[in-house]
Structures are given as C-alpha cells and as structure tokens.
Amino acid sequence: MKNISTVHDCYGCGVCATVCAHKAINIGLNSEGFYEPSVPDLSACTDCGLCREVCAYLHDELSQQNPVIGSYAVWSRDSRVRRKCSSGGVGFELGKLLLSKGYKVCGVRYNAELSRAEHYVAATKEELVASIGSKYIQSYTVDGFRAIDRKQCYLVTGTPCQIDSFRRYARRFRMEDRFVFMDFFCHGVPSMWLWKKYLQEVEKTTGKVCYASWRNKTTGWHDSWSMGIGGAEEKVNWHDSYHLLIRGKKTSYASRFSRGDSFFTLFLSDTCLGRACYEHCKYKLACSAADIRIGDLWGSAYAEDEDGVSAVLTFTPKGEELLKSCDCERVAHPLEVVVEGQMESSPRKPPIRGRLLSLLRNENVPIAQAIRVYKQYRYLKLACQGLRHPGKMARKVMSKLKR
Ligand SMILES: Cc1cc2nc3c(=O)[nH]c(=O)nc-3n(C[C@H](O)[C@H](O)[C@H](O)COP(=O)(O)OP(=O)(O)OC[C@H]3O[C@@H](n4cnc5c(N)ncnc54)[C@H](O)[C@@H]3O)c2cc1C
Image (cartoon, rainbow, N blue to C red; front, side, top):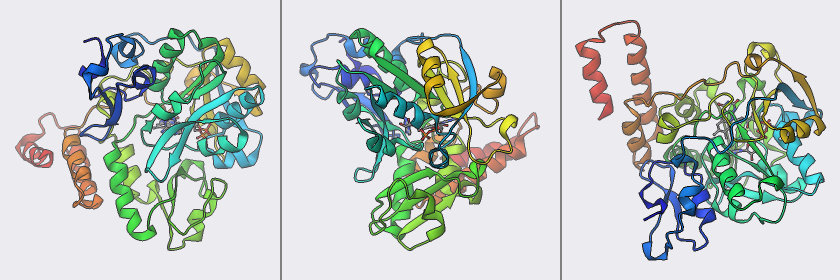
C-alpha cells in the first residue's frame, strides 16, 4: 500500500494525518513515548499516496533549502515581551506583526487538561499569548493543523521537521504563497514518558497541574531553564508566570536546571530524545525549510546579557522583510557569531536510553531512580574518557545499566 502504515519512529509531525481526506491516519504515542502515525483501518485508505508525499521523514532532501540571507541578534522593544519569552521575544513580535496584516498564527500552547503541548490557531493578540515560551515536549499537531483554512494567510511555527513536512503540504495544495514558515534551532524532543513521570511527581505537591512554563528569567536569561507549575487552586495566567518562583505557595512548584531539576537534567542530557532526533535529523545549524529560523543567541557576543537575545537567520526575502518590519531591535552579525553554541550535529543515542525510557514509563518507579541510572552512566562515561580500553569493569557496569 502507498500509505504511511509502515513508517515508525518518524518525526511524528502529524502532517500525514492532516492531509488525509478520509481521516484514516491516527497520531498516537508509541511505546517509547513519541508521536507516530498508524492506520487502524486499512480499508479506509484509498491508496492516494498523499501521506507519503508530504512526509519530510521519507524524503532525503528538504522541501526547500535556501542559503542564509541574514544572520542577526534580535530582541523585542517591549521589555515585558522580552522578559516573558524564552530568548528575545522575536517569535511573538513576528506573530503580532502578521496578525496586524490579516494573517492567523498556528503556534503551540500547553493544554493542561490533556497534559500536552499542542498546535492551535490564534486569530488575535490575546490568543497569541498562549504561544509564548518554549514547551520542551513534542507538540501534538493534528487538531491545530486541521484547523487551518487553506484559503487564508498563516504564520506556521514549529520544529524544523514539522515545518519541512508542512511546506510540502502547502506546496501540494498551492497555498505556499499565503504562508510564512518559522522554525527554531532544535535540540530535539524528549519522550512524553519523561513529562508524564515528572507531572506524576509534581502533582503529589500541587494537585492537578493547570499551568506549566519551562523558562523563567527571574535569575537571569542564562539561568532560565526553569519549571514553573501551578496546581489546581493556583490561579495563574500566562502574564503571571514570572511570579510563581517567588510565591512558593503549596499549590505551586518551581525548580531550576541549575539546582538539579529532574526534567531538565534528563532532557538536556540527550538521553531520552526521539529516535529520529538521533538518527534522522537533517536540520541542524542553517539547514531549514522555513522562511525564518529563531533561537537563543548563546554565544560569547551576548554572554553578559541577562534579558534574552534571539538568534535569527533569514532564508527568503519574505522572512527578511518581515524581520525588518517587526517591533524589534536588530543587529547584524556574521553567521558564526549567531550560531555559536548551537548543536552542529545530532547527539549519539546513548546505550542507556532504552533502560531510561522503560523506567520512565513504569508508573511504580520514582523519577529519582531514572536520574540515578543517568548519573551512574555519566560518571562512568567521564571515568572512561581518555582511556583507550575502558576495561572489563566499565563494560560490566555499562551492561548492568542497560538492563
Ligand atoms: C523542543 C524545543 C527544542 C529547542 N531547542 C533549541 C536549541 O537547541 N537551541 C536554541 O537556540 N533554541 C531552541 N529552541 C527554541 C528556543 O527555546 C526559543 O523558542 C527561541 O529562542 C525563540 O524564543 P522567543 O523568545 O522568540 O519566543 P518564544 O515565546 O519562546 O517562542 C516560542 C515559539 O516556539 C513555538 N513552540 C513552543 N513550544 C513548541 C513545541 N513544543 N513545538 C513546536 N513549537 C513550539 C511557539 O509556538 C512559539 O512560536 C527549542 C525549542 C523547543 C520547543
């Protein structure tokens, strides 16, 4: 059959399900905790092949790969926007600009009821606010992508692989001209088993989580890997997230990477990313199918800046013009300055990944056990560094950790 049913461990971008007129494709979590398509009833499939045509995972070439036109450091002129956004707030400012031009924005919000990040369509500035801030989990795209009216104009934002597939879809239905595509430098997405396990532990303190944010600049942008979580009785809105850390009520929870937060410890260690993030990512540095790419400018040029600076690359005249018109300060830098600190290639899949994912999936295991396994692995890796032959002992411990 010409459908997607044989594809596993892909990007989980959901564009195949979006394009299927017969709704034959389901997007659900696989055994490792990543979104993946399936075709539950093969008789619903008409073999049109569209799902494979729009799938970026099945194509070696990007749907579009232009050379970089401009590379910049950018930040919002509105200090409140800059403070709330993950880096300099350029993503929000571009969305605001396009809304004022009659576009809609398809971005990502956190759905606390379903405990997931999801794409949605914002038609007003107020609706756009929920897209502020990176949600460092894989987003469920299907409802948001399906809500896009093919006759209207949109800014679509997402991971580079989501955008690559979506451009194929837009091209196939001759709507590319009405779309602007924005992606980001992408580290990879962690397993949803990590997120669910983390919530399970946090909810012991807060009750049902009704709000979550992943970044907070209270102690500065360079220390902003910080979870802020509001429980059932905590009335938090997106404008209020900043104060969660200092309120310290029983119904709220705050924890930073620099103080050992377990979500960030595992996410940033690259030990539980998607298979495709290790083995199939074509999108590092300046490889992008978008009009514009954003991220954190982590390099030495802004090492002293604690308000947040976005790294921005433009690939098309459309992206370049929009960046010039949005309400942001913009400083041109050579490409190597803007991409300094970004991953140049995909991380290697670590041998303990399978073990970690099964611990995270098991409801009866505390997250501390997974952290312990990761720390033992890190210790062993450090101990073996520089040794040509890691030795019998190291091999023995490693094989124990994998089990
Ligand atoms: C999983 C993930 C990995 C990332 N890895 C890197 C990295 O390695 N290096 C780097 O410099 N930057 C990375 N970023 C991007 C970075 O965190 C900021 O989003 C970026 O600096 C833009 O910040 P901002 O201040 O302009 O706006 P923000 O307000 O932070 O903009 C966030 C934008 O990202 C979109 N978004 C949020 N969560 C998701 C999601 N889960 N999936 C898809 N889209 C989402 C929103 O719709 C919005 O458009 C990553 C983001 C995510 C979600």
